[in-house]
Amino acid sequence: MTRPTRTETAAATRTALLAAATALFMKEGFAHTTINAIVREAGFTRGAFYAHFTSKDEVLVCLVTELADEATPRLLKLIAACTTGDQVIAAISGWVAERSKSQDVALLILEAVRIGGLATGGLPALFAARWGEVGEAITAFFPDRDLTLRPDEIVAIVVGLTYGPVGSGLTGHDAGRLASGALRAVLTRARTHTL
Image (cartoon, rainbow, N blue to C red; front, side, top):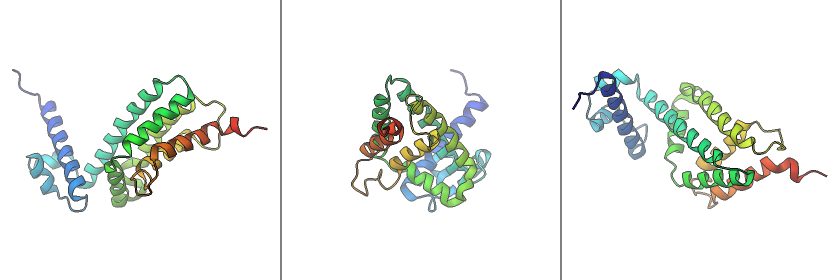
């Protein structure tokens, strides 16, 4: 059995710290989670923490970034498996229905915005890029769509329905059904409203 390399050990430490932080942020909230609690939960020292992160805020930004980086390929794969616009709408609406059952991501994003405002670690640029990529894949199925909304704005609507008050179940609405109606309205508007 070979010993892990320094790079492998560092990656494992970083992963363990992020996992511990995620668990604590979800359980205790961002504000009540301390760096000491994160390192204790992960089984490391503060030195190990600072070898990977400059602050608890940076951990939060890293977590939100990882979530966005994880969701994008998954959505692109769902869209790539489609052959019609109706299938795309069904696939995205199914994803919304599934993701809206857990508001953990929404809480992390809200915490990130709360701690750093709109400029938090480049998250707005990250979201615009990821949402643009997914939006381009979606809109490719709808060449005759209304062009008043950019592809990233269409995905922003989907994300808002997934992780906002509607997605939380607070309003009693089905987020997947609403996403389907919103996508259908935005993407097929040009065809359904012609004279």
